[in-house]
Amino acid sequence: MENTDNIENSQNDVVKKQPEPNLDCYELTPEEYEIEKNFQVPGTPDGFIIRPYGLYKAKFYPAKKKEQDSFYLLTKVSDPIKVVSNTKNIFDENWGLLIRFKNMEFLTQEFLIRRKSFSDLVTWYDDSFVELLGKGFQVLDEDGLREYLYRCRSNVFQTEITCTGWYKDCFILPNQIIGNCKDDIYFSGSDYDNFSCQGSLDEWKENIGKYCENNHRLNFAVSCAFAAPLLKLLGIEGGGFHFYGPSSCGKTTLLKVASSVCGGREFLNNWRATDNGLEGLAEKRNDTLMILDEIGQSDPYTIGNTVYMLANGQGKARANTKGNLRKIRKWLNLFLSTGESDLIAHMKNVKKTTKEGQDVRLLSIPVLNKFADYGAFNDIYDFDSGGKFADYLSDQTRKFYGTPFVKFLEKLVEHQSEIESEFNEYVKDQKQYYTEDFDGITNRAFKRFALVGFAGKKATEWGITGWDENSTKMRVHSVFGDWKDNPERMTELDKLKHQVRKFFETDPAYKTDPYFNQGTYGATKEYWVTPERFKDDVVRGFDSSWAESQLIELKWIKKDKDGHHKRKRRCCGCETTTREYCFDAVEMYGSRE
Image (tube, rainbow, N blue to C red; front, side, top):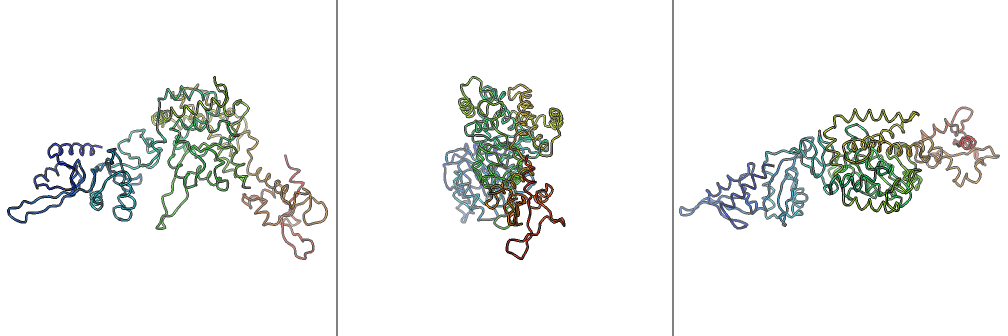
């Protein structure tokens, strides 16, 4: 900003006029003090002087005797410090002061101080002051520094952005702003290294991109990185894709190649994290691709809720130390995941079932397919084996990364007004390849797959991938077909039917004879279950009211002559009766497909 230049120039002028040594205090005559004040940047509080050697606080001492002269005593407060701008968030709240200084190695540092910290000494010393010291800033007078910053004014105002993503018509990255409002924005988030660039776009295309064109999964993974920034422009919900398959089949290589579109290897993360940690990561990846390796390291008890959280784009509501509600983290992104098992199998390890809402938010795609002869790869080009091909790609992703995403965003910002109409036309065109009507789940999934195909198509049209323009469309159709026709994909009702049958086949009280009439005499092919066992064991993980209604409609639960779905039952040797569910084994197993 221009204020910074003024500070530099004024300090240089003062050095030329008064080459003082680096003293902790010194005296100035009133005339010399007025000269110093004239070189200060507008907004510098009265009583403070910034010199090349530091920030000084001035105190006036009048002459006590005729033969004495009045003077100003300048006492050093800290190293030189420069106020760059005032900051505020997008709601005109949480005002701050952006400062710049050099640390003990003379490297330039920036730090954002919240103005509210000036009103609370505990917050000032515990947060702002400690952070300053940690960045290598030297302070001699803590109270003097606090007073200077509190009274300091700047005529430069910036909007603070804390995470990546769209802001008005521009796209914010940690290390650059793509759009027309560069001078109005200050990015206070982290992740500078994660969105870094190395090598040119042509080098990425030659060493990585060209090997993805004929590989369905690689092509799809790369296109996912381009698809994430389109979500907000098109009003599409967040969600993810999960590649699953045996060890050493190329799953992690898919993620490394996808990561190379956006940044370095640090862009790839792991499922082994708390919900709070994943919330923070998702917020940092707002409007971009979030990549998580090895779902097997996540907690199977909570992974279902975590998938909901990531796809719905909102973290948990929490209170601060005063009991007030903290700001809820929000984001919108795609996430790409891998694991040796899909979400259903991972949760089944702890006897939990997935819901349709979880399945559609994280679409599971088998890595191995009939077109891939080398694990995750269809074509290994001139390499001797799939392993050597994977090693090559892994090595190249350490050398060339980041530039494809920046180039894509530059084109996207330029053409963002055209995207929605083009996407709608693309979806309409792609649906012509399918004659059957999609159910609600399949239709939602198809739209997300189409988004990936459209993103790959636009990246290719804009000269970013180096692929043939039809390659992404065909690869995405192939991957969508693998998801749609996957025999392991079941509806919510299919999962309920499978679980109920499994219960009676494996529970010790029933498994000895699938047609044994529990608690009565004769083989009438019925199972009796108490309401407690029904809720806690038979339909565990499902809404019990919904499950009950579905099983009654299937005629798996038998009603009595009065139409009650809980029938009276007298146990052997008991005079009292209880009402229990009566399952018809013939209906259950006779209806097995």
